[in-house]
Amino acid sequence: MKTFRRVLFWAHLVAGVAAGIVILILATTGVVLSFEPQLREWAEADSRQVDPTGAGSPRLPIDELLTRVRAERPNVTIGTVVISADPGAAVRVAVGRDDGVHVNPYTGEVRPLSGAATRATMATMIRWHRYLGAGEAGRDTGRAVTGAANAAFLFLGLSGLYLWWPRRLSTRAFETVLWFRRGLVGRARDWNWHNVIGFWSLPALIVIMFSGLMISYRPVTTLIYRVAGESPPAGGNAPAAVAPVPPPTPGARPLPIEASVQAVRSTIADWKTITMRSVPRREGAVGSAAPAGASGVGAGDKRAGIPAVTLAVKAPSAGPRFSSLQLAYDPFTARLLKRESYDDYGPGRRVRTWLRFLHTGEALGWPGQLVAGLVSLGSMFLVYTGVAMALRRLWNRARRSAPLPAGERA
Image 1 (tube, one colour):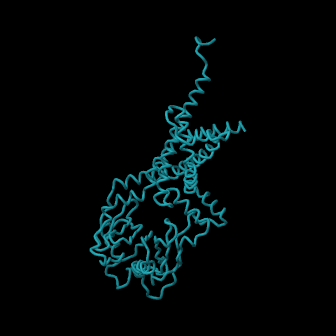
Image 2 (spheres, helix red, strand yellow):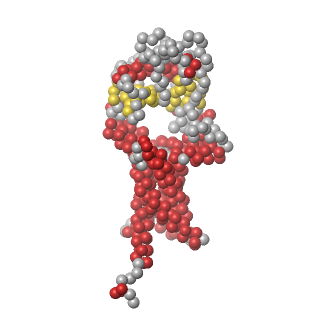
Image 3 (cartoon, helix red, strand yellow):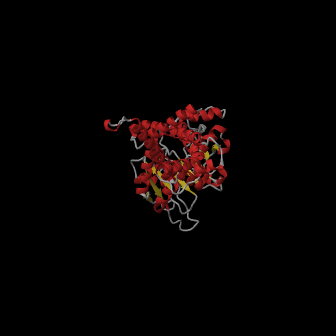
């Protein structure tokens, strides 16, 4: 047992020194990213706020708003569109890869997103947290390194608990490592801080590190599904609500996207946001001179190949705070083709979904995000104190093993 403990100790020390700098980067960026949604919302508040000019002000169809965006940004691809139930909130439209605009739903005014500095900082933090700041070509390597650091940190946490556990159980033995002690300096202070922060952070750290492994490595996701008795989805991630579109009647033309949005508004009374993650660009401008009720599909388009309108709806009735209703609508009739909620998930997908949002604490709201942020902050101290103690030990070991100068030999 003593030999095993010595081997585990040295494995703990080497893993900590080897992965320390990467863990420090993950922890530092994790402190900020724990509150990424709130920081982004705060940064974009200026461009997001609009004057509804009264609760009964008519909103322009979403198709018209997208037409305005395309007119302003003709050479970009429209990505995610987010519609808020708040009458004083603009519609957020992602354009290009890292840009977006806010569109006034009452006037169609297109505004650039405010808070450019904050958004740039968040993008940099995400790039370092996921890929160690690597560019497009080096992202696979960066992801592999951060994944390995997650695995090392998980090992450090579990091995640290074993190494810390008192050999003789007593109140005094636990008190020396469970509470901060005043007046300590140097190695004694680092040892106290390392053990106290490590012990109280460990439950959350295990969840954060394991969920990080799940995000980094597809086999971990596969394992979760297998243990739950399910077949893992192709690609590692569960698909959104995808449904085949029935063949349209001859001569039928797709309805405006607004028809599907209105279907959500009329059937889900407590909706908070409606998100469309894929906006297909069709020939002819939506909302322009196309025939009434049409979305501007050209005569050469293959109607049978038009996908369903897929919307993700946030609502209190949708389940846990991080879940959403996935709805697929027939683009020709606005008839609901498929509805998928958290209650429809299998156990494997539920576990994966929880872990994804427990990683940042969002699954538990701002208290969970606060815990994630504090644990990330504590991890920075764990790296500092751990490396400091390791370097002292290695330095002292080297000094003891060094031969004495000739004048000092007996």
